Length: 131
Image (cartoon, rainbow, N blue to C red; front, side, top):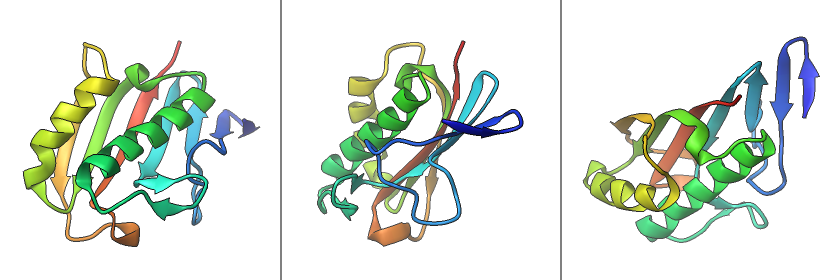
């Protein structure tokens, strides 16, 4: 973690590296803002597969890696945003999400989008609160 004032940059090699003018996450006091994660495999920076289940799992793994780098976990997420190029996949997001989160579940939005970077089918970003 490095900082500028009250902002700390969160970075880990266990998640895909930022491919633009952004940080993997920014922490201010107890709040951590996670940038959007697509289903890139950190070691290859390639989409894991065309299978939507594989993509959803990889996104949760990437979010988890960044949350861990911020001394948190997925269960510290208070707000999760899910972006899908096909909203018919939303029930699958719910099913897979239950494997990664404990109750109480975070507040959440699901948004249908026309396209995502690198032709991904899913992207998620999140806000964590860490004590």
